[in-house]
Image (cartoon, rainbow, N blue to C red; front, side):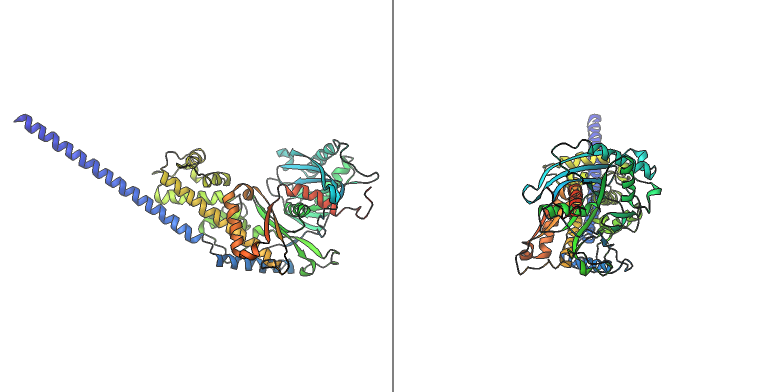
Length: 500
């Protein structure tokens, strides 16, 4: 009898334990279901506030056109687009001949380049370049130290000029200078620095003509060279694109940052107060990263990113579409989901709270993951954010966030390009078959294929099938470097002289 009672007690205990486990399992399932529901709620909200229906994109493009016109009218118009006169009125035609140099300064490295141009038949006969790193102390030193360092490297590069490059006797070497910092351009070959960016802090250069500073440094090096064109990287890309294709009318850079330039009719620039250029054209540097529109889908994620950035209130459009920021927007969305739904565990992963730790290349790698178990997503979450052992369902959610953020950026960029086409009257079916080419440069467009494909598809949707058949986006790798050399050629002091 005692044994029966003992067995009965054991059975009761076992049943109770099993019941307790079942309760825990049910509770756990309910918790997971609740977390998933909260996470999906955030995703659903994200889809709504990041939405870019075609009607909205058309409104944004219309406002782009209005801001362009205001910026062309006056620098005091209050336009969010600076519409800077580049003084480039002659783009390469393909007829250029001779030896030309370029200097491309846009960050912690600069490139020096030389090209031998052979005219319409031979085109680009030969090119050589060299990349030089700028020591950190030079970037925060004095103006003379910086330009002496650059001029010294340039002089060393010129000294390696081989017999394949030919400079006619008695002529001065000419240089195109790509300077990708804010300047107030005063002519094709002069411009005063407004402020340094990208880690440079050299106060005694601010307000000075950067071409004059470089020229004095070249003279100190005993280098006989003249700067014939001062341009930014977007205008260099436009020039490089035009050299390869005379149908290029605009250039867009979609990389770490973003900007656009295009060819405008000189008579459509009311703020131009000089003699109209003989070509009747003028290249305009839009500085479109600062574009604002009441129809841009600016969210709390964008507002917090902007508020905590180094330039709050500026470059709003850039912060929604460029490579510097897309990965950071994704991080902010994932952080909110982690806080509200604990999808990465009870405690928010510490690394997920670090601004800009998730870069756009990480985001692109996850977005392009086609493996059945999304192993690349799992690897990036672990390596970058320190988040391991994530269920497949959660990994799919992460890819979904990347998709929403990337496609909003691509569609907004397409709206900007559509605005330029509208301004030029190239958004409709042309009576005569006229091809319109946009030269595109930048790692975001080149390497993030889902982004670039979405941009192209959206532009086609905006234009309509028939009009879009004459519009082409052409990748222009390293346009800014060779473009500067080509602009030195098209603005050469020896134009009209016999090249023989």
